Length: 374
Ligand SMILES: Cc1ncc(COP(=O)(O)O)c(C=O)c1O
Image 1 (cartoon, helix red, strand yellow):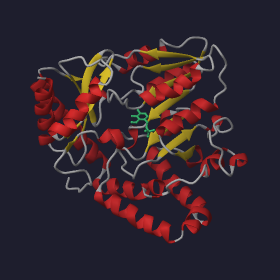
Image 2: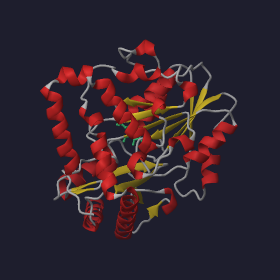
Image 3: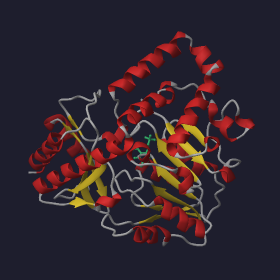
Image 4: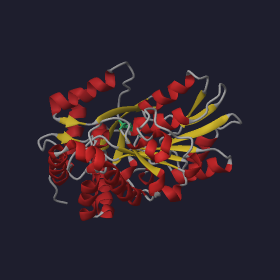
């Protein structure tokens, strides 16, 4: 697939999942939108803003299989998670179940609840788990009579693990429990159908795998929670209900939101299914090459992965700053960017597959890790 991106073509950039990256057509469309906004910021940000947000909302809701009435835009996935957790009525002794794949900033938001006397139960889900039923069992065995919420990743950050979220939601619903899905990595990497999923709360990023300029995220809240979920920072229209409460929470850069349709056009033109097949095949072949060079193995069964793969490192880097130090050496000494990560005491390299990546990038990662770990 012949596409041009702004990432440095001389660098092996294998961390698309970290912060996204811009295809040239989306960057150009964003520059045009920027010029239109700057021609009259007041007109855009006041008179035209509600209609603009609504048009983008319709498009994103269609893309995510959500009802437009349930979807609001938030600054990023961290803000979306904090919004949901901060809106629920927690009492000392309440419990929330999460997994040991959760993103660190999600752990931080859950940490806020600890101060209210809430117990956070973090369930271990092994990366070599064999079936969706086992995963559901690992998650749900943390539930007690005091559990108020289950938090699960759609695609986990430290592992790239694709969780069977529909099964987790169904199991939680049987116990009468709401589920917050951290879908930061899902839009673009996976087909998403939030209505079919039935999650009470879902938050996903539009600057990672949809590639709108960073940062922008969608929060989708089931109707039964519309009276409960409110932003931490009140909008001008706070009193007017769920969506109005999020519409203007202070001046922010409007470009990430306004450029989402251009980003979706870019991917529609390529065809999502073909893109996803290409990403998975590319990163899976690359991961096997890295594992072969390191004499380790690719973690996680193919069916629980999408465009991010995990390879075990032959060393354990557990001391403060050690993993970051290795990742920074890869950048500065070897021209490779990849995420060095940890799960359940094992150290891994996480690599991504995006259209600007080539097999040579994984080759470079393999050689760089061989030399750096020597
Ligand atoms: C799984 C997951 N959740 C949440 C986040 C936080 O996203 P943001 O930095 O946009 O708030 C990330 C970021 O990488 C993530 O990977």
